[in-house]
Image (cartoon, rainbow, N blue to C red; front, side):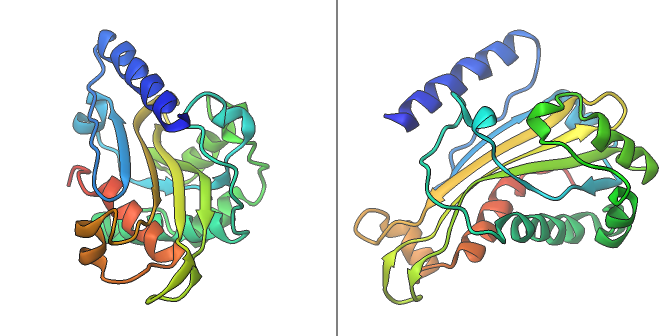
Length: 221
């Protein structure tokens, strides 16, 4: 029921954005659930260099009503893990156009970065981005991160991953691209194709890597 309500709300928001002339891209990728919204500027403007911020834990305020998921526990290392995965995948895609993690840590060490949902203009994040000469910021939060209980061949509980990510302009704070990913790996009996592609039960980090690759698969070159 919660998933259906979230889907209805997302469809309503897509229609609202379409009415204002924003280009919408929505894809449902099996076996994971991927939802993407992109503005025309994402495809026409220069988005690099990109500064990747440390992902945050999703807050109840940010989750309320939109893509609200179950309250399963989140592994303490989840934010750092997903941040590093995004950094690795985007670095491979854009080579030297990603601000290094060392430079980001140095530039952000003098700032206290608030929860992203409490700073809708991303004032602090944009100051850091400007100091790094970045064009855009990749910001994100973790909604779900539960590792598998068991091993690659047999489990008691499968891994579950949920995250939100957005690309924000340093110049004006506008969101150019936004993605939501959620998946609990399913057994062969309910997802034959997906399970045969992977052929084993994934760890949370492996499932997160798959999710990041899915949401970034159609980024412009």
